[in-house]
Image 1 (tube, rainbow, N blue to C red):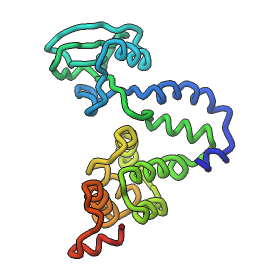
Image 2 (image 1 turned 60 degrees about the horizontal axis):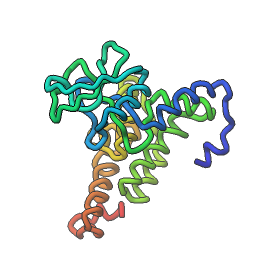
Image 3 (image 1 turned 180 degrees about the horizontal axis):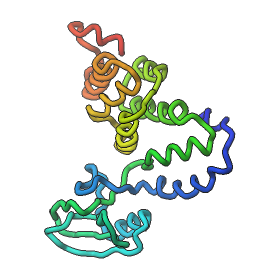
Image 4 (image 1 turned 45 degrees about the horizontal axis):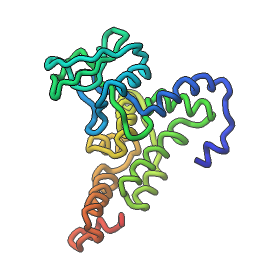
Length: 226
Protein backbone atom coordinates (compact mmCIF):
# COMPACT_ATOMS: atom_id res chain seq x y z
CA UNK A 1 0.00 0.00 0.00
CA UNK A 2 2.82 2.40 0.85
CA UNK A 3 4.33 1.84 -2.60
CA UNK A 4 1.03 2.78 -4.25
CA UNK A 5 0.58 5.87 -2.08
CA UNK A 6 4.05 7.14 -2.94
CA UNK A 7 3.93 6.27 -6.65
CA UNK A 8 3.51 8.96 -9.29
CA UNK A 9 0.48 8.43 -11.47
CA UNK A 10 0.48 8.21 -15.23
CA UNK A 11 -2.43 10.34 -16.48
CA UNK A 12 -2.38 8.50 -19.81
CA UNK A 13 -3.55 5.34 -18.02
CA UNK A 14 -6.50 6.99 -16.28
CA UNK A 15 -9.04 6.18 -18.99
CA UNK A 16 -8.26 2.47 -18.87
CA UNK A 17 -8.45 2.45 -15.07
CA UNK A 18 -11.84 4.19 -15.12
CA UNK A 19 -13.05 1.54 -17.55
CA UNK A 20 -11.97 -1.52 -15.55
CA UNK A 21 -12.70 -0.42 -11.97
CA UNK A 22 -16.53 -0.77 -12.06
CA UNK A 23 -16.23 -4.35 -13.36
CA UNK A 24 -13.47 -5.26 -10.89
CA UNK A 25 -15.36 -3.89 -7.90
CA UNK A 26 -18.65 -5.46 -8.99
CA UNK A 27 -17.07 -8.90 -8.28
CA UNK A 28 -18.80 -10.51 -11.26
CA UNK A 29 -16.75 -12.77 -13.49
CA UNK A 30 -17.15 -15.23 -16.35
CA UNK A 31 -16.31 -18.81 -15.40
CA UNK A 32 -14.73 -21.47 -17.55
CA UNK A 33 -16.55 -22.12 -20.84
CA UNK A 34 -18.66 -25.25 -20.58
CA UNK A 35 -18.18 -25.36 -16.81
CA UNK A 36 -19.75 -23.90 -13.70
CA UNK A 37 -18.95 -21.31 -11.04
CA UNK A 38 -16.69 -22.04 -8.11
CA UNK A 39 -18.64 -23.32 -5.11
CA UNK A 40 -20.43 -20.42 -3.42
CA UNK A 41 -20.01 -18.05 -6.38
CA UNK A 42 -23.23 -19.04 -8.15
CA UNK A 43 -25.72 -16.33 -9.17
CA UNK A 44 -29.00 -17.50 -7.69
CA UNK A 45 -31.67 -15.10 -9.00
CA UNK A 46 -32.69 -13.45 -12.26
CA UNK A 47 -32.21 -9.89 -11.02
CA UNK A 48 -28.59 -10.51 -10.04
CA UNK A 49 -28.10 -12.34 -13.34
CA UNK A 50 -29.25 -9.26 -15.21
CA UNK A 51 -26.76 -7.12 -13.31
CA UNK A 52 -23.99 -9.62 -14.00
CA UNK A 53 -24.92 -9.66 -17.67
CA UNK A 54 -24.84 -5.85 -17.92
CA UNK A 55 -21.36 -5.91 -16.39
CA UNK A 56 -20.30 -8.29 -19.15
CA UNK A 57 -21.90 -6.20 -21.91
CA UNK A 58 -25.14 -8.18 -22.22
CA UNK A 59 -28.14 -5.90 -22.69
CA UNK A 60 -30.98 -8.22 -21.70
CA UNK A 61 -31.73 -11.32 -19.61
CA UNK A 62 -33.89 -14.25 -20.67
CA UNK A 63 -35.56 -16.30 -17.94
CA UNK A 64 -36.03 -20.00 -18.62
CA UNK A 65 -36.51 -23.37 -16.97
CA UNK A 66 -34.70 -26.00 -19.04
CA UNK A 67 -33.09 -29.26 -18.05
CA UNK A 68 -30.80 -29.20 -21.10
CA UNK A 69 -29.13 -25.88 -20.19
CA UNK A 70 -26.89 -24.92 -17.24
CA UNK A 71 -28.72 -23.96 -14.07
CA UNK A 72 -28.22 -20.42 -12.84
CA UNK A 73 -26.82 -17.51 -14.83
CA UNK A 74 -24.89 -17.98 -18.07
CA UNK A 75 -24.17 -16.57 -21.51
CA UNK A 76 -23.35 -18.20 -24.82
CA UNK A 77 -19.64 -17.99 -25.47
CA UNK A 78 -19.79 -17.42 -29.23
CA UNK A 79 -22.42 -14.72 -29.72
CA UNK A 80 -25.53 -13.01 -28.45
CA UNK A 81 -26.36 -9.88 -26.49
CA UNK A 82 -28.36 -11.62 -23.75
CA UNK A 83 -27.62 -13.38 -20.49
CA UNK A 84 -29.80 -16.30 -19.42
CA UNK A 85 -31.12 -17.33 -16.03
CA UNK A 86 -32.18 -20.96 -15.85
CA UNK A 87 -34.26 -21.74 -12.76
CA UNK A 88 -34.09 -25.51 -13.30
CA UNK A 89 -32.70 -27.07 -10.10
CA UNK A 90 -30.01 -29.19 -11.75
CA UNK A 91 -29.80 -28.25 -15.42
CA UNK A 92 -26.99 -29.64 -17.58
CA UNK A 93 -23.57 -28.35 -18.52
CA UNK A 94 -23.42 -27.05 -22.09
CA UNK A 95 -20.12 -26.69 -23.95
CA UNK A 96 -21.31 -23.55 -25.74
CA UNK A 97 -22.17 -21.68 -22.55
CA UNK A 98 -20.15 -19.70 -20.01
CA UNK A 99 -21.39 -19.25 -16.43
CA UNK A 100 -21.61 -15.78 -14.89
CA UNK A 101 -20.54 -15.79 -11.26
CA UNK A 102 -20.06 -13.47 -8.30
CA UNK A 103 -16.94 -13.75 -6.15
CA UNK A 104 -16.63 -12.75 -2.47
CA UNK A 105 -13.85 -10.29 -3.36
CA UNK A 106 -12.96 -7.99 -6.30
CA UNK A 107 -12.08 -9.96 -9.42
CA UNK A 108 -9.00 -9.03 -11.43
CA UNK A 109 -7.99 -10.08 -14.89
CA UNK A 110 -4.27 -10.13 -15.59
CA UNK A 111 -4.78 -7.20 -17.97
CA UNK A 112 -6.40 -5.23 -15.10
CA UNK A 113 -3.24 -5.63 -13.02
CA UNK A 114 -1.16 -4.50 -16.01
CA UNK A 115 -3.35 -1.38 -16.27
CA UNK A 116 -2.96 -0.63 -12.55
CA UNK A 117 0.82 -0.99 -12.78
CA UNK A 118 0.84 1.34 -15.79
CA UNK A 119 -1.32 3.96 -14.04
CA UNK A 120 0.96 4.02 -10.98
CA UNK A 121 4.15 3.71 -13.09
CA UNK A 122 5.17 0.61 -11.14
CA UNK A 123 6.92 -2.63 -12.04
CA UNK A 124 4.17 -5.21 -12.60
CA UNK A 125 6.00 -8.26 -11.22
CA UNK A 126 7.85 -6.61 -8.33
CA UNK A 127 5.34 -4.02 -7.09
CA UNK A 128 1.97 -5.55 -7.95
CA UNK A 129 1.99 -9.31 -8.55
CA UNK A 130 4.46 -10.47 -5.91
CA UNK A 131 2.85 -8.46 -3.04
CA UNK A 132 -0.60 -9.72 -4.06
CA UNK A 133 0.56 -13.34 -4.08
CA UNK A 134 2.36 -13.03 -0.74
CA UNK A 135 -0.64 -11.28 0.88
CA UNK A 136 -2.99 -14.00 -0.38
CA UNK A 137 -0.79 -16.79 0.96
CA UNK A 138 -0.39 -15.04 4.32
CA UNK A 139 -4.17 -14.92 4.66
CA UNK A 140 -4.35 -18.72 4.47
CA UNK A 141 -1.96 -18.99 7.40
CA UNK A 142 1.60 -19.57 6.21
CA UNK A 143 4.16 -18.50 8.79
CA UNK A 144 5.97 -15.18 8.79
CA UNK A 145 9.22 -16.99 7.94
CA UNK A 146 7.71 -18.68 4.90
CA UNK A 147 6.13 -15.39 3.79
CA UNK A 148 9.51 -13.69 4.16
CA UNK A 149 11.12 -16.27 1.89
CA UNK A 150 8.51 -15.52 -0.74
CA UNK A 151 8.94 -11.77 -0.30
CA UNK A 152 12.70 -12.03 -0.73
CA UNK A 153 12.53 -14.39 -3.71
CA UNK A 154 12.65 -13.07 -7.26
CA UNK A 155 9.46 -13.55 -9.26
CA UNK A 156 10.41 -14.42 -12.82
CA UNK A 157 8.04 -15.72 -15.49
CA UNK A 158 8.41 -15.74 -19.27
CA UNK A 159 7.29 -17.60 -22.36
CA UNK A 160 4.89 -20.49 -21.78
CA UNK A 161 5.26 -20.08 -18.03
CA UNK A 162 4.03 -16.49 -18.32
CA UNK A 163 0.95 -17.61 -20.26
CA UNK A 164 0.20 -20.15 -17.52
CA UNK A 165 0.80 -17.53 -14.82
CA UNK A 166 -1.62 -15.11 -16.50
CA UNK A 167 -4.30 -17.82 -16.45
CA UNK A 168 -3.74 -19.09 -12.90
CA UNK A 169 -3.10 -15.86 -10.97
CA UNK A 170 -6.61 -14.35 -11.38
CA UNK A 171 -8.12 -17.65 -10.19
CA UNK A 172 -5.83 -17.69 -7.14
CA UNK A 173 -6.75 -14.10 -6.21
CA UNK A 174 -10.45 -14.79 -6.75
CA UNK A 175 -10.49 -17.92 -4.59
CA UNK A 176 -8.27 -16.42 -1.93
CA UNK A 177 -6.41 -19.69 -1.44
CA UNK A 178 -4.18 -21.92 -3.58
CA UNK A 179 -4.76 -25.42 -4.92
CA UNK A 180 -1.86 -27.83 -5.44
CA UNK A 181 -1.36 -26.84 -9.08
CA UNK A 182 -1.10 -23.18 -7.97
CA UNK A 183 1.59 -24.08 -5.44
CA UNK A 184 3.59 -25.92 -8.10
CA UNK A 185 3.33 -22.93 -10.43
CA UNK A 186 4.32 -20.47 -7.70
CA UNK A 187 7.31 -22.57 -6.62
CA UNK A 188 8.57 -22.46 -10.21
CA UNK A 189 7.82 -18.75 -10.65
CA UNK A 190 9.63 -17.83 -7.42
CA UNK A 191 12.46 -20.36 -8.01
CA UNK A 192 11.67 -22.05 -4.68
CA UNK A 193 11.65 -25.71 -3.69
CA UNK A 194 8.15 -27.18 -4.11
CA UNK A 195 8.30 -29.36 -0.98
CA UNK A 196 10.52 -27.44 1.45
CA UNK A 197 9.47 -23.88 0.64
CA UNK A 198 5.85 -24.37 -0.40
CA UNK A 199 4.09 -27.64 0.51
CA UNK A 200 5.61 -27.90 3.99
CA UNK A 201 4.53 -24.45 5.24
CA UNK A 202 1.10 -24.86 3.62
CA UNK A 203 0.66 -28.25 5.31
CA UNK A 204 1.64 -26.75 8.66
CA UNK A 205 -0.81 -23.87 8.13
CA UNK A 206 -3.58 -26.35 7.29
CA UNK A 207 -2.88 -28.47 10.37
CA UNK A 208 -2.82 -25.33 12.50
CA UNK A 209 -6.37 -24.46 11.42
CA UNK A 210 -7.42 -27.94 12.63
CA UNK A 211 -5.98 -27.29 16.07
CA UNK A 212 -2.46 -28.73 15.79
CA UNK A 213 -0.38 -25.82 17.10
CA UNK A 214 2.94 -27.62 17.47
CA UNK A 215 4.71 -29.84 14.98
CA UNK A 216 5.53 -33.27 16.48
CA UNK A 217 9.21 -33.94 17.15
CA UNK A 218 9.29 -36.62 14.44
CA UNK A 219 8.93 -33.81 11.93
CA UNK A 220 11.17 -31.36 13.72
CA UNK A 221 12.61 -30.05 10.47
CA UNK A 222 9.25 -28.50 9.67
CA UNK A 223 9.47 -26.49 12.89
CA UNK A 224 11.71 -24.05 11.05
CA UNK A 225 8.56 -22.65 9.47
CA UNK A 226 6.74 -22.07 12.77
